Image (tube, rainbow, N blue to C red; front, top):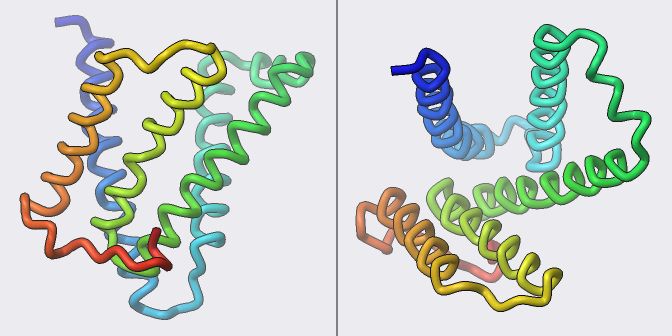
Length: 161
């Protein structure tokens, strides 16, 4: 087995673990009522991720991390992606604050659905059957993982949605 492939699988597993822990940790922080807000958590999270990303990029390819500043189109794309990512994570943490981590996770799985629909609209093409099957399986899988097949733990109020 290729060493890079093994490292990739290990990093993917770590990402799954950290993603799962993130929602539970946020729910715990909100329950403490220690003054953490969803916007504060998202901002800290994005800043930490940005610093980590730039550090790794700087180590891997010194001098290349500022090359993006020369391309205006890329800068606009990065800014738009950052703003949309902030919005997606803000709604995720707001759903956790108003309900629980499981409900927030189920709602977060709608993001790829909207991305797929946006691409279909933007490219003026219908959503393929394969894409519909993938989206359905992804949402169903997260739902089953979060609830163990029992939807009673999910609380959907108008504030959550």
